Image (cartoon, rainbow, N blue to C red):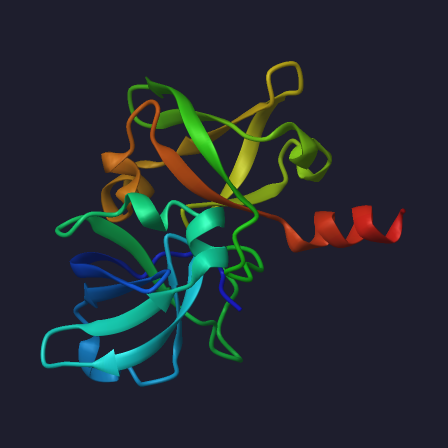
Length: 195
C-alpha cells in the first residue's frame, strides 16, 4: 500500500529483456535502506526488489505489468517516480494507492498557469465510471485531485503545484506521452458493489 507521495525520482540504470520479462535496475539515494523482497512503486506500479548491488537494486516486470503500464517505454537514464510502501502509523498525506495500475492514459494538453500547470489526459472509455471531479487519482504514482472531467472525449485534468512539478517526473512529461493511471480504490469498490 502506498500514498502517492513520491519519495524521489530514481534513475533507470539498465533494462534488459529476460524471456517475456523486463529486468530493470534503478538507482536511488536511499539504497542502503532497500531490502530484497521489498515492494516499491515505480511510476505507480508496485514491483518487488529481487537483487541488490553496490549502486542499484533490481526489479522484474512481468507480462501483465508490461501490457498495462508504461514500463516498456522506459529507457536507460530515464527518471522514474519512486515511492516505498506506507509505514503503519505514518501520516497519510496522499490517498490509498495500491500500486496496481489500471491503464495508461495519453497526455493531450499541458498549460502553464503562471505558478502551476494543468495537465490533461485521455483514458479508455470503459474507465469513465471511476472518475469523480475533486476525487483522487494516481498519475505515474503521484496522488492528485481531478480538477475537471470531460466525458465527451474521455479526458480529465489535474493541476500540478511547483513542488510536485520539480520533485516528480511531471517536468519531463510531454504531450502524447503515456502515463500510468490507478483509479481510486474506493470508487472501484463502490462501482463493483453496485453491480
